[in-house]
Length: 259
Image 1: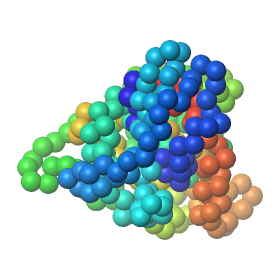
Image 2: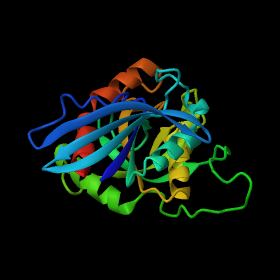
Image 3: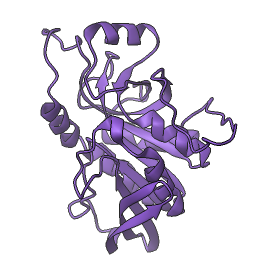
Image 4: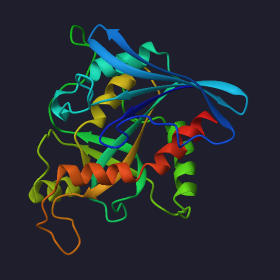
């Protein structure tokens, strides 16, 4: 297994020091900069021995910029990021996303999966600027990956088998959060959660034939959905903190795929 992981507001960095158990050992941890035709991308590459078998793990922080992770969502170079993963010859990509929840059964703290996305932003995300090539995204996320990840998430979060674990991601342009009216409209049109990045990656992964799945951390209720306080302002730092407090199910998925 060569696994690519893309982190965002949740999973800022890949700190494996406290995640490894007796069956998984760290063999290599290298930082490198990969040059692609769309720009340079910092990658962190690990070799892990899982039950006697070596696996490669490549981590990319989608908001990377000048050594930090503060690139705003509308300025992310998704083409460089996905081309770097493709160049690393990964077998699959798992994207970690912080989202605002609309669906009532997706409260803050829950980690679930995307099974569809809706993108009405009008912003193209493609490698094919110079020729007409059309990629099917009828099923935008890898079904085998999603089934495997769902079984891990249900177990680690102590959910019953009836728990809803797959939702529709609505892409918003950002970098502003949504208005209450926008969230109400998004719900009517089928959106279960809102975010500013992930479907752009999913489109590019499909063009590259890269199996891709999105782990979605419900970091907050979307605008107007906070129980008891519909007018509550959304705070970026509060949202980020919540996303990074709910990483244990994410770690279980990453290590579960490798082991």
